[in-house]
Image (cartoon, rainbow, N blue to C red; front, side):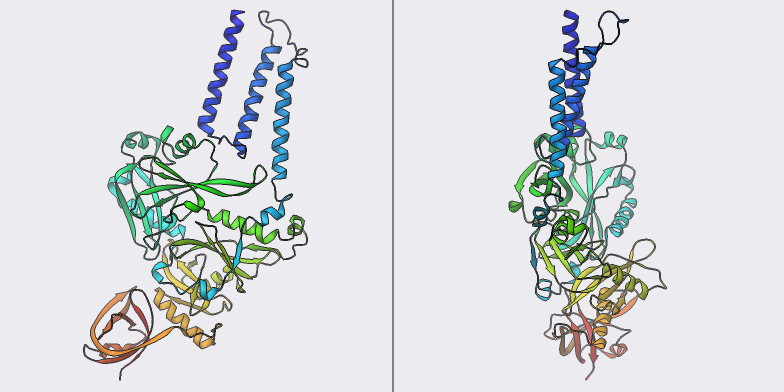
Length: 543
């Protein structure tokens, strides 16, 4: 009897240890909406039942005695455990089916509220210093180049692949932390932590390594209790964390923005976001907010992939699940890509909307706020993004540049695709603007201002101005108080200031050669387009 008691005790201890190790490694949420919890319960009961059954059928003492299965059918523990296991599996399977769009199409379709937007009112002509010129891949190249130039860090750290796009102090930037180069490098550097992160200005392409006074000690790249996921799980054992992104607050402090999933349909369906946990990457301190109470400096609560998925539910399930598969009446879906736009210090996801039965043109587009989930639909028919990208690439086919996924901008009250063109090394070399409704109207330029001038000229030539509004050009007349020559992207420019006028006027020498005759004290008439730092001159007249 003492031997059996000792065996039971050892078996129990081993089971507890196994459960503890399993939980420590897999980190399932203690929440019935989590599939990990159900897998943990089902696997745990199955293992216990298996061990108990083995002990019942294997003879003790006499090893030559055959296995005895006769008692399993009548054993209450075995029958009870098998019954419980069966019930859990049935509940999990039935819950999965009952949570699916097949059964709950109308609930899925209503997860996202979509408003009708007015393009000319909602999307103002924004400054070019607010337009992200780079995509994620280009930002990654710049980040790796920056890291390679830092001899003191390059041997110990590499750049992580987060590159989250945010608005920082009014500018669109991508930020990403460094990562330990290997497990050995973690052991040698864990006391100080990760010493810096990289910040890339998406408009100017300026890349900066931001060194921290105190290193980051809570990241997905740390181990044991300092691992971010394990740190969050022990603090919030019932939370089901969805998307985790890297951001910096307005003071430049590195933070992890950890979205907590909320299930709105059955056990496992209708996933949105219910709460946000903000974790300080340096100290590990956490603040828990509802989505509505989250600080406004946070840019990414809902991931772009989740927002796109929610809109696809909204667009395809209007008349039920079967219609989305068979008849497909009134079914709309997002196009095969998205980009980001900075509006009012928030990051909005842009993507086109097309009919599910056709991929040749867009019927409109949507903007979705990554912080609030606010979604606006704009019914503007035009070329699908792929067609615009092909048009832009065709314009510079001799250079073999590759187009990035477009942004939708308001240029002279015209919906316009703005596209960056990259060379073989992945760096942006030129820019293109393509009219959404007439994608044959394509302008390119080595700089954004040059591209814009060419595009507006094409709009005039083609008589395009759908809103009937002016092209937002202005005139200025005055005496020159200062004139300076400069070179931008290999092109000569003259910068002019007029008396009693704070504007700086940018004149491209190749377009207006007569500007070389001008001196301080001369009078000049200028037609220009407003800008943030400089005004782009479209016409020069010397009285």
